[in-house]
Length: 128
Image (cartoon, rainbow, N blue to C red; front, side, top):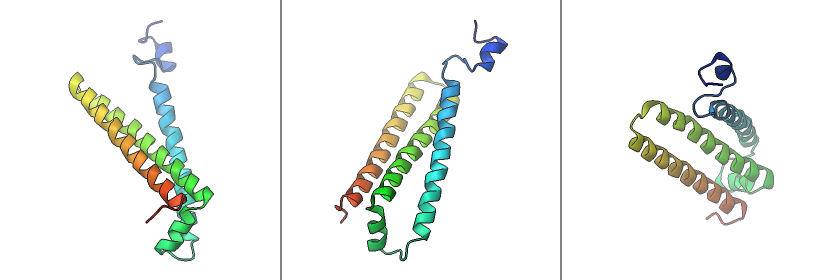
């Protein structure tokens, strides 16, 4: 069956055969971001104080540290997916598209790694 048939379009079988999956993963990360941000906002609102000791003490607990780590992964993954679509839609030169997606991947992996290491340092008591 060709991708150009009506049933092929309904099944989401575009030229890359991944359009529906990409769209679905972006929606799942958006829902995850929403849930984790609500947890973060409510947890921070319930803190007795907002000084360095109180916030790092809160962030060093298991549940908040895990939620923050998941939030970092979800936000950077979501951003990567969305920006990848922009690059694929608006950058037409193959070399420029490859360079932009490579830089995008490096930036999101680097930003995510920095965030995860920062949370790990706080959670493990190494924050200075």
